Length: 145
Length: 303
Image (cartoon, rainbow over all chains, first blue to last red; front, side, top):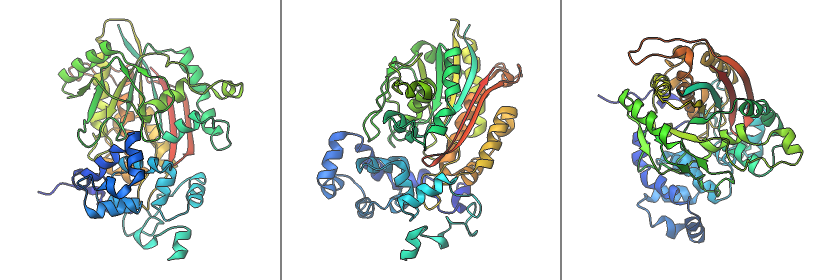
């Protein structure tokens, strides 16, 4: 019998479960390596060469090089691990989280100061809140598409 | 005899630590948040514990995907603040209490909670930000020139790490019952120690995907109400409700149920018989949005 995964119908969200964890094992372990200053320096000096030292899929490497955190998550990344890439780039958690919405840094910060994103319309896939697939990307990212 | 006399609950947002470390506490953005903890800093001085049992989660710092313990108790003599990628926080090292920690591990494991025992572990913002919020300099002190970080933490700390990173995390029910077992363990420790138990993390926040930035003030405040008045009922809340209503990282709030389960009013003896004491007194309650991506909640309950 398949495991119960009641969280698959939450929009704009990937729950890091055992399946995602297996998929993302080397991607996340690469991220862990960036907790050492010497590894951060080596990665920054030649990103591709450093990534090639890890048993990651080509897609995972491309997602890291593109700094596309949503893409990284789809290939098994977890945000607490991926945050080490952001730290290496000198980004805050807010900049990283905001980058996944399509909003500019300013727009995302403004949303948070105004009380954050509402849960209304964002509880179940199929509603029409701002986190739903049909409403991506958000903010001025929307106008560009 | 040792006794748990109070519980403290607080969010542990990394940006709060960064604001303190970089001297930003007096900025307009941060002032309201730090003012909410001025009472708490004085309260901790007036009610100084001998040991803090600090429930938090590791954020891919000490535990990578190589090992993912559901419940890990730190039994070491000391714990170093970790380099999470931005360099280590400039805060004091954490002094442990190996004797009480080992006693709790032995008691709780014999009480059917299979803890992982950790003798070497760096501690991340999940543990150091609550310590900074409760033990650092107050806003008036900082305004008068004091540094935010103290020279040393006021007492030994037992780190207790809960896996809330890889799903499934422990249920609220399991956390609540573990808190009851921790109370029994502390009750059976002979030296006279005043022990505080802290539950940290939350409140509503989501750090990932197009739904990042989710905040649910109404849900958070209902959680605080129920944590005070009906923690046993609250412990039955399923994971999916945390995720749907409080964001994927809001699930950290299950850790608050460990601290709440260790309070006198919900105590049980080893046979599961209720030994209920008085309802706790709410010494302090504070709620603020936002700190970076997160709703900040804070409670102090006295037994």
